[in-house]
Length: 240
Image 1: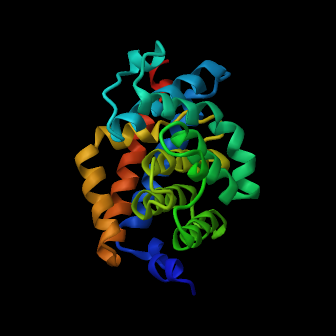
Image 2: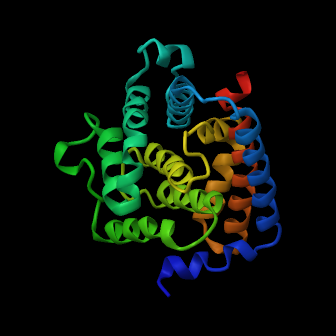
């Protein structure tokens, strides 16, 4: 088994994790089913992506509000996050076929203009490229969508394979998993807003994950189940 597989093997057997994700999944399914019985207009998806872009930007240090982003007045970090959100759904089939390529494109969008052109979309070194390939393979390992999204997110955010804009890439990849898995095909959840609402726990549990060990993995996954429930509460479906 590869080192990543060694660390993540049996993640669904950690105490409380499977039940936490099952409860969150039930709540998400109920919301999408009950509130989505009527036709879902594309404006709701656009609003979800906008809210997510703003929340992800704030987590990356942006001061821009939702109103700023909606009016096109966001700072450079917010603008980068919006660029990512605009192309995100178009990358779903790319992620299914060649996830490494999709992740590289996410970085190209997130880091454009902020780093030299010759490093945009490229892992920072050989070790980072190998780690990125391992992360790209997580989507095909048969775990549930929520757990896969959480693991992809944490790996990208903590390994920082690109060396810039890795947080924006991690949160966008998380949404790609949720959409591409079929859990949220119209991208109405706002997981980024869930993380922002729980920001102290988000940051502390990412640090715990980065430190390694089963305890850090368990803490991150339990946190992620809570964050995805908060992301469902932030959905524009709740406004209907």
